[in-house]
Image (cartoon, rainbow over all chains, first blue to last red; front, side, top):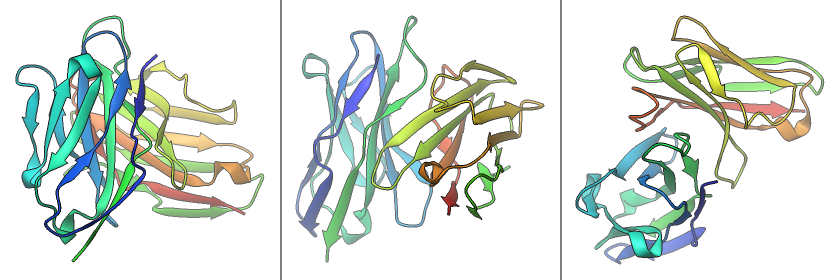
Length: 116
Length: 114
């Protein structure tokens, strides 16, 4: 079975600080990896995704994530956060090949608050 | 449609009543998912549809929960004899297919059981 751990449940930063949110998963096969974001009062939306290829993935609004297969990790990063990045961030994983579940498994989420 | 829509946006009900939640996926999306999100928790998978069939119902918490999908479009999630622990936001998502699995989420239905 797949599982996802997000280690930081609450993160508080000042504007211009650097951000790294941890995400580790457990699944032995090929995976597809996602970060979703939920801004206050808005729907969950896709921030970035990894299916294959370059393990460093760039998403919207200056976010990036790096897939490190040996560490089963897909950490989200941003060099300089803005107040508008205040949101809930969810990591998700599902099996990318046959034999696993296409149903994405979501982490518990990380609440990010950025102070102006 | 332009996005996934859900109705109602808010539902307050009394314990023991039945409720029906509706999801309209993006036109052409064959895969549809229901999740439950309790306060401060992650997304809890409930059920998944591919077309009109539900190959995975493993997340439904009890037999009080059921869902159907007709015409490869609208889906309804029904909760019978609601309990206070059913209070949560119920999210619906759709994707182009189960193997192309970027999901597009609706705004959710906030269910409060008194």
